[in-house]
Length: 187
Image (cartoon, rainbow, N blue to C red; front, side, top):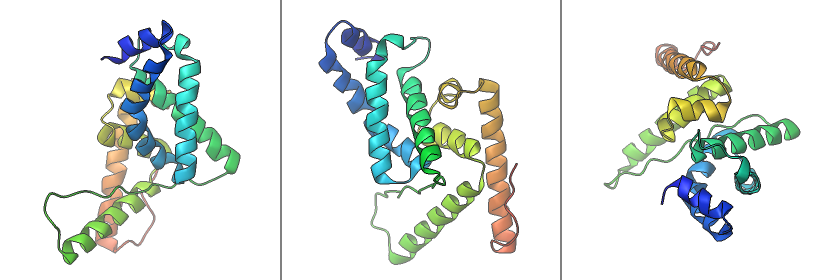
């Protein structure tokens, strides 16, 4: 069932149908919030808060944008409010990649080193680049959806992604050339 139909049913009084949206977006939303918050406890609280806020304001949802983008925007705003409140630094966590075959010890070590390196290099980027790249390549959101989440024009999303990839490439090259020495390439 499409999101629009589920929302129509919820607004028509079939409130239990909202569970369909929660089930559909809970896991990807949690992964998104992990990129912003880092703390597992904060992530689950923020996700629950975002779903509750979306439910309470469902009558204000505009069909002009995908529900997923609207929900992510709510969650992002809640997460940023939490970070401001607690004055935390954003922690970028790396996802563990699953592989079909059983990797050997060398492969496991190399994969962990690469994940750590990528996480460190992503952490060096400005937050808006990291979020745009994550939403595009990990969550597979469209530029328009990312614009809704980040509350910026689509043209700025394109700039964030282009510049973010360029800075990421520069930081990786710098680390390879200088063994991690030097200053990160930032805006």
